[in-house]
View (spheres, rainbow, N blue to C red):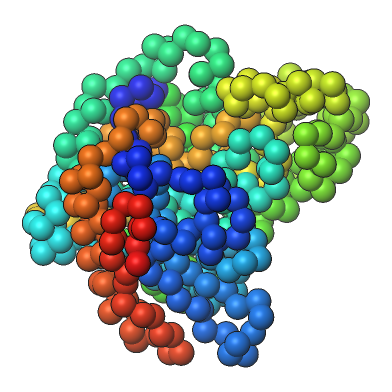
Length: 434
């Protein structure tokens, strides 16, 4: 499988805009205060409800690309999954994502911000219960990464390397998680009776050999007819249903393997059931026989984490924790992308088909915005914080972000009951968006 795990290096924000201590904790309003470009309350049947959802378009101090944004549920109560937010919130999030695709496809933005030849990705991580070690979903709000790499950035991945070029066993397990290949058929088994044809899509058959040849990324692939489906009323309930099925699948597997489906206390992990009990319970889940056998093999290689070892890991390096301490389930990622580059002849909005990729994690702390397929390379690692952007580069990024924010505000003006104030501007790097 071709990989680009050491190639794509993205700088962080200039020093004055980097995260301060008070911005790494607390509610979203506190964490995102300097970085919120656009924010709005989502309409509810009861206006002024205390638990009203909010959406915010946020700049990032540690970006995945020179041109990227985060669209996040931003109310005070943590709502980490597609099922935790109101349906209207999910609809607005996916409609906003569609507007992002439209924006980068338009001739004006393509020319003004030199977008020709670049590639787009939408990425969503779900890891609601890992709150001790490094998590795939660091911020426990339901949020979507809006990512765009320029043609210049993508030159770095023009010469990928075979998987075997990475010989460090710890690094390889971070980049090829034990669930990397098993996740595809496992997730597909949970989704096989969903009627994807109702939205013009289909669940693609698994093909491990195609993954090994580099013709498709690891995971479960769903083919969608085009990008416009993100704005259809049926898309939000589909994504909600996918989450609910993966959560049930995860609970069943956890019950079979450790005898419990509730997350453990921080810095603890449940003990494995005896091997014969695990085997019997996994067989009873009704999974396809090859999948159940693979899960059996995987769990036979897992080891209990003693309280003493967990205490040592609490003081150890992040790399050590990621290698020895599992994530709490469910833990999965979603990527949405089209294969072709964004050009005047084939703008990304015209992409057909569009692919929805579902992947699962057991040990890695790298989310699907940091380890993903780009173009013809099925596994690209984004190395963030590789130096810092210049103030000039950051201002160019801010101009692009502001232009999209204004496009989004105008595009959502037709939504009943929705009011969005004009987007803020980046006053300076210390004050942020005001």
